[in-house]
Image 1 (spheres, rainbow, N blue to C red):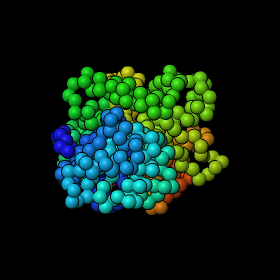
Image 2: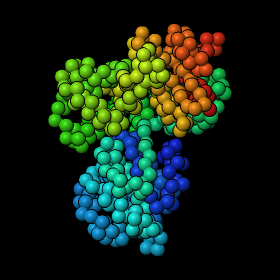
Image 3: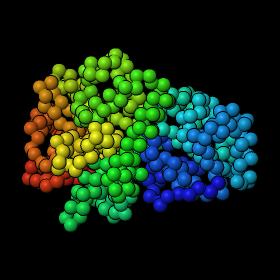
Image 4: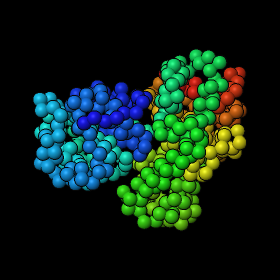
Length: 418
């Protein structure tokens, strides 16, 4: 099956998945709508060869009907449409969450037909898909997540490949004559986010319209339809209230009072929003149970463009009162995409309100990072270093860091993770 592929901007995840294509396990690529999953499937199709591939979009009712009829009908369809009868065929299933019971299909296909067909599937709701990741799929699946563009991927979309590589591998070596351009790119990324379709637009009006379409036609609609939510007004209120409070603590009881829903319903909605890749919750770091917070999470948005359109504010950073919160949200996302497998991101706060935005922990390091849009001394570092003398503390700035005050550009944080 021949598929047109847009200008090729390879995603970081593509290199991670490629070596797994020859394995028998089914591959799941999960992520929000419009994050580029279909494009990634098409790129993988080109890697293995379209003459060995079948692409199936389960948003088409007739295809969904066939694939809902069971393995026998699926095999009939695949054998009829397989482009090559003599070699293994790669079956790319897009939007698999529409299949009501795909776990049974995956189990049978992997156990009995993996020598003939390799399943590569995408899905937009990790909640619904993970619900079907029962014991029957243990050892039969590999799961990956595709988010909106990370900042280094964004730079590649802007044809700044060298700058993108330096950001990841040599963040301390970015030349001075590139910093102004990097700040401009970062401002655009913080305001409009990393959805590929948005990044490709030049006009601010076009960017805004696409963000609105993603919110109204995909995010909120998918949540309501897939999870059969009836209290749609309260859900809309909750999403917009969270957007206005990024970087703040998530208090379920306060949210229940504000939204006028039961506390348990608020908890369920937050789980859904996280599983649908709209928000992320950050846990606290604690060792001393008597002086440090240990239960309340902080909240960030997966994509700052979605957050900004939800509060109807796409102004430049210098005109905004929330630029500090937006920079903090960016830093969380930047760290999230780049921490090593053995590193965890947390935040720290004491009961007398001393707080540090991000704590990076591993067996080899304890790193405290405070975000300041324009640079400013953190009043909480001293308290943290008294509690954790072996820790390293740094302030991360959007612009004009002062090295004498242990300040760095935000993107230089990656150099501390090595």
